[in-house]
Every structure is written in C-alpha cells, then in structure tokens.
Amino acid sequence: MASVRPYARHISRGYRTLTPQAWWTACSVQGIPLQPFQRPLSSGRTDASSAKTMDSGEKPDNCLRVLIVGAPGAGKGTQSHRIRSEFPVYPISSGDVLRRHIAMKTVIGQRAAPIVAKGEMVPDNIMVDLIDNELDQLDHEHWLLDGFPRSVTQAELLDKSLTAKEQPLNAVLNLVVPEEVLLQRIEDRWVHVPSGRVYNLSYNPPETPGKDDATGEPLTKREDDKPEVLKARLQRYNELTAPMLEYYNAKQILRTFKGSTSDEIYPQIRQFLSERFSQK
Image (tube, rainbow, N blue to C red):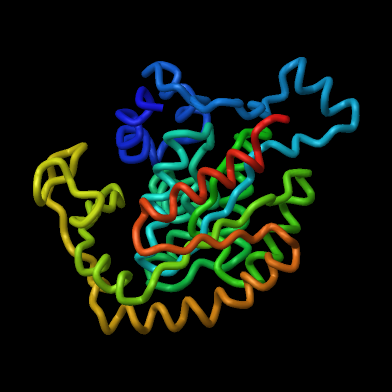
C-alpha cells in the first residue's frame, strides 16, 4: 500500500476538475496505480470479457457506485481522498461538476449559470442532468458521488435516473462525527477559492502554511465557516438528511461510520468496501 500514498494528494487536489476520460488518462500517464489492493475490483469497462459477463445476465455487483454523506465538516473530502488512493473510483463532486459546466458554457451550464449568479439553489432536475451527463461518460466505471443528493426528493430523482441506466446506487457511506469536533474542524478549515481545494490545519494542512499546494496562491476562510453559521447549517442538514438516510436504510444500502477523527473512521470504510466489492 505504501506505493500508493504519495499519489493520494496529487490525485485529489490536482485532478478533481477533470472530465472522467481525462482523469483516467492522467492517472495512466502519471503511472498512478488504480487497483492497489489485494483482490482487485472488476474494472467495469465494457471490453470483450465484461461484455461477455453482461450478456450472460450477470450483474457487475462488485462495481462501486457509492454516495458519501455527512454533516458540514464531517470529513467527506478527506475520506473521499483516502478511498481514491486505494480504490479505482472516479470522484464526482456535484459542486465541482456544476462549476466546470458553467465555466465551459455547456448547455447545462448555461441553464445553471444565471441561477447560481443570483445566489439561488440550482433546481433538482438540473442537478440530476449534471450527474447524468457525468455518469454517461463513465460507462460502468466505479464512482464515488459527493454533494448530491441531499434530500429524499433528490434521492428519488437520482435513483430513477440510475435505474434507467441499470447502474443503481449500491452503497451510501454516512459519516457521523460529534458536533463539538465539527465546530473545531470548521474553525481550522481554509480554502483555495479558485479551485475549491479544502485544507484543515488539524489533519490536512497545506504544505506551505497559508498557501495552496498546487498554485502557491493564498488560502482564505469561507464566510460561512463561523460557529453560529455552522450550527444553523447542521440543523438544516439534519432536517433534510435524516429522512434521506431513512430512505436509503429502507433500501438496505446505508452504512454508518462513527468517529472523532478520519483515522478512526477510514479503517471502517476500507474494511466495508474491501469486503463488499472485492471479487469472490
């Protein structure tokens, strides 16, 4: 596993805004190993061997189609980075995807841009279209979704879309961290606004204090990274997310991981993913 760790930060911070094809290509060019654990996952690609399997009626059950959820400051980004350093998953951050489409002025991006410019919430149907577009490019690859859905309504819309693609969500990773820990994490959090890269002085500090690793540009605090704002966000998160978690629990794909640090939580996640998705 040691050979993988130096690449983790490079992948997560350098390639997070690439398209799916560009991400896989970049990893290949850089020589980044994408399947470094004992019993590798099926790639999920529709080559001759996988096409044969699919034609035989077998479902690629060991293909990762995973959603990660957690309250603000719960460490979704950190856990996603660690998962991606050991499992061959393509990261899909709904916020990053939205920003990329707006910057590239795609059809979906042009629909979303004026809404975002007004500071309003992007409608659910547009967000589903964004995720749909991303998944269409992956062609049964493993993926890890972050940032969407956030409510039962959104979850139902996403499920409908994924079912139509015959790629249903098969695991929801729910991160549970004590509120006092969340407050401390938010206090220690700094961001690189142009890229959206997030750092934390406690467990994920920048290589140079106050500077972005990739560009050397200054880091700043988010306007909403204040205790009173976080408490309001946590209340809203719980109101929206609790019903969604019940929805996924009823579908028997919800897994909850508890801890005060990422080092406490990640081994639980790693064990679950290895057991759930490794080939038999």
